[in-house]
Length: 111
Image (spheres, rainbow, N blue to C red):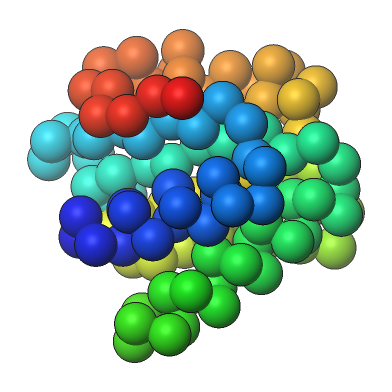
């Protein structure tokens, strides 16, 4: 799983995603083991980040199980089974405050 996280964080960083946060749920959630949250500068940037993550993970043989919110680009959710990726526009991230909702999770990485 660490390989997935590195590929995802590198892809986000490469396309200028901001405020990258990796949360480790340490078996505290049945939904996923890790969540990665980042902020995109625009809907098009969010879509580009999503595409880059998908492409880079596919190159190493990891397929996504699902994607939500791609068309609007306001909040894109990528499901990689044990890893969920949330790509937000700034206003949407501030509104939903997932970091506060998941305050029980351990911060593994923050940029």
